[in-house]
Length: 350
Image (cartoon, rainbow, N blue to C red; front, side, top):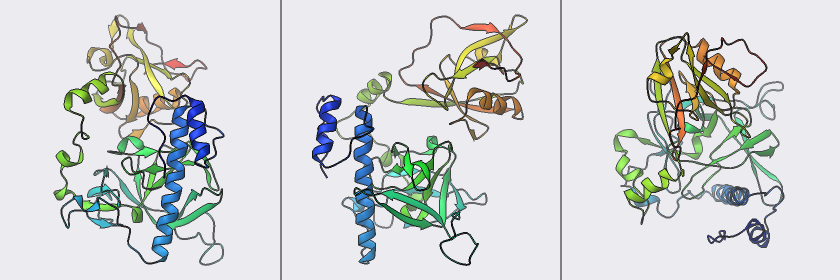
């Protein structure tokens, strides 16, 4: 399949190239929309090719899959878990062996709501993954076993499509970021969790996993180049902070133009005493809380995040995300503490 020209093109040129490929461009407002549409169509074609290959009884073997040592790639559809039901290995793309998830996913069994198979009135076996085809129809397949991620931050590597309407609600699809193999699962709009179909992934024993091999810099990019990319804002970092105190001394707010995202708006003081969030020296204005004691904050507004923080048992660990290009603000934004009582305004502090 053709790729979009990598030169500096305007949105008109991007949509023109897509239309020349026979790809619909309605809804493509930005360049990122065009790239996402291209990925979705490519994923649909891959799914169709895979289904045809499986119907012929052919195994899915992609170029480069033998790059790892023989026996190290793992087992297609493997479901080895520990006592808590958590993945015991590395989950990889079955085509190019890119590591997608480490030991973070939980094995779950899912059943669809519609009873198209089995006894009348009983749920069908497996959850449906519906994939759009270029001709506007849908290819559907049922999978019983899924890997559940709390949110997309649990991926080591992933590419996500845009949300779009499907026969089962608005969803988006995780794809391999290297070869765009997929869809590998789904995420429903309004729900932070991501589900990956076990049958569509390869599970590798973690004893055979090499971070040095999996996360080496791409050819032609050295460490100094990566640092420059990070400092330019082409990435983000996450970090945990643990508090024993009930009052943390931060004020959070909804992020403008980003529904379901919140950020630190200011630090607070009470009777002249500054809070532990400021005093720890790790947090700055603009940082985003993304997880509270393991519970995802993605998709929640500031009120729901505050409820998570205030209601969590102490000690509480909050994971923050910071844009790699974010610079520490000059001076500290400091406001008086306010008790949380779900007021109509958009900022309050725990």
